Image 1 (cartoon, helix red, strand yellow):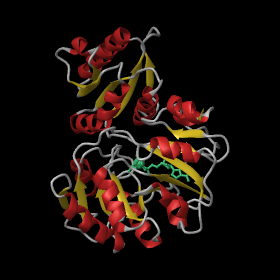
Image 2 (spheres, protein in one colour):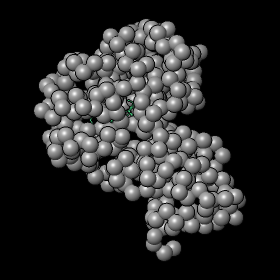
Image 3 (spheres, rainbow, N blue to C red):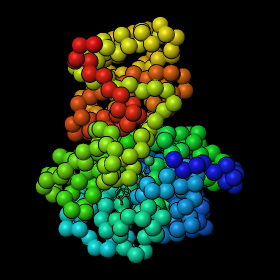
Image 4 (cartoon, protein in one colour):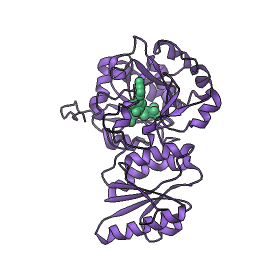
Length: 360
Ligand code: TXA
Ligand code: MG
């Protein structure tokens, strides 16, 4: 872990409502980006913490403000598709149809980088991740800044990604000059990351699923470490995967299995932990909430619509973490958008999973 610097200049962090004041907010944001400063901005996935993506000194400030390990590369955000040309050495053959279909949107593509991209952005890799966000404010900010904006999620390293401006404030108040508030993020999990170096491979699952990508470009592999911890000595296809990530202070346990078995097991674990004096919270679903009468729980969404669970997972983790010693979270099948949900949940749980279909 990089050390969080305590000697950062203390900013009087300003929040501008970018829905009511999009023009004023993005003008001010663009000025700060051009001056080498950081701006937090909304995207359709999670909030980003942006800097001029061609300015190495500005990009270093991102790592300092977040306390992010310097070996974890950033995504360059662009406002129009043709901007990718200045960032990639060449356009991989599958890229054009992917960009035409899914940009703007929650898909990040990785290809060999051009010389214009500073090593600070790619953590020394010879590839760079690029995405064109759908969110209007994000695109207006990038267009006005006139440069690609390098941005990771706008959380302190190790915290769940922020899906509201308040989450950004909670993590980065005093460490950055400006937050553009665009309301809650639509998807709530970060973009799908697809490497186009060699066989197309999903390094991080998101709202654009393997099935959607495969329908367009044929076979798409999924990196093995998406649903399991890295093994000792294994090199990460994506450096971000080796960090635990999304980790609340409370202990998190994921419980998988049929809905009824899951709910029953969670109920038993809840009562046992409470008897030990622990404060417990349950991340529940519409289908199982009747089982949790009298127990503290938050309904994330519908098990049959994993995107609803994705949309609320990070904000629910932050909320439950305020009160709980233990968070018991329901798992779902890791299919379609369920893969993105389980990828984030298993990391939050440090891969602590209980299978409720197995006897205790
Ligand atoms: O939705 C998103 O992607 C959000 C918003 C703000 O756009 N951004 C985001 O960035 O989630 P970040 O930095 O939190 O995650 C970027 C992920 C990391 O896991 C990183 O390791 C991986 O992408 N990545 C970036 N560049 C890479 C590269 N050249 N090769 C492999 N992995 C890369
Ligand atoms: Mg992140």
